[in-house]
Image (tube, rainbow, N blue to C red):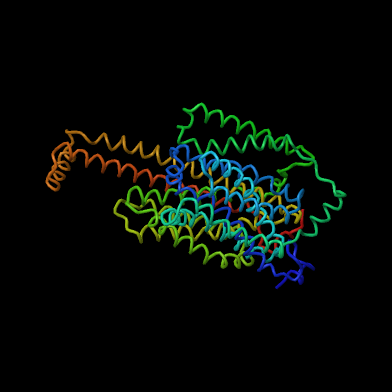
Length: 527
């Protein structure tokens, strides 16, 4: 079915081009960009070794990308309106492809960090523009299936990223983590040129301006760069620099708070804002952004913590750790089309509530893990938790667009993708900090029991000595290592419990969303 039969020409696509042809093209562009957020994580040690840098220095390869990416995300809607959405999309793909090539060929760590900054800038528009194109290409009643295609890309990419990155690094070189983007980008550019066009409402807006460019809000842009840049650096470096004990992190926190608060105030009263914060007057949009931030929080935090658990405590290799996550990613792919169809038949708030409830239960089952848990136990819990994410992304995206004018789709996509990415950054940062702090807490509590006056301690030392033939000193070392493992295990369980509670607390909030089903609620162009 082409949208010619719906609105005399598919917005965002050339005439007589089915939106089902458009969907995979733009989804692949988003997948490529989201994948680069997580795929480089597992290659850090190899990058540090290959470029004669420390591991701490190499982490700036990740931080530089997330900082510049976060800055471009919220202004991508404004840039689409200024440059033209198709032109901006193609520039992003071309720039992302070229900077990926530059990253793969970088001779030093300094040049790699510079190219990663440029990669984050050029890739920042791929996610929101892809979603905006899909939102316009499909009529409101079919948006569920459009977001299913997009959801597969942005939810599956973080799940497969560490596995793919580890396999590429182990079998080839860390440079191929970046170079794999080259053939994808070269294929996408001619496809976008052939299939995509700017929607009529964007052409009419440019015509009304008489070809003049909108005013550039330099003050708003400067505040955004300072606020989001400082926030992202704080989140990425906080745990490594010991948070508030670091003057650098305190300075970044103050800059982030001042910059973002001033930005919101400035944009609220500016006549031509680069980010339309007035969209938050729409109740559905505001709540959907909260839900999307929480989704990003748990999606990326669980994807980061679970592989750490099986590698640190269960002895899994990087590839085996990836195989724990992969079945959950496959479950998401299988369920996304089903949820896309349900969105047109079931109230979105019921689907969102179901997703938060089931995924929260899946996370809570992880609190039953132990040092003896087998692969199937861990994998099935991940499948239960991850599969329910499909019931969140599509309905949340649909609820966010419900009632918004079509000409606001670019701004809405930019904000909601920023919410998900920021949620992911906060999730990873908070989860790793909580893991370290709770492990230390449990270690100190368990160490209180290791005393010669404790009969259980004496009995355990005796059993270790009999089993291994080791002396008291060696037996004490073995026992202490077991204590460290138990403390880490309890720390991981606390993190899983925290994420489960966070998701379950979202369930009653779904009733804030207005009643209605995709295609039967407020019309897409309603104010």
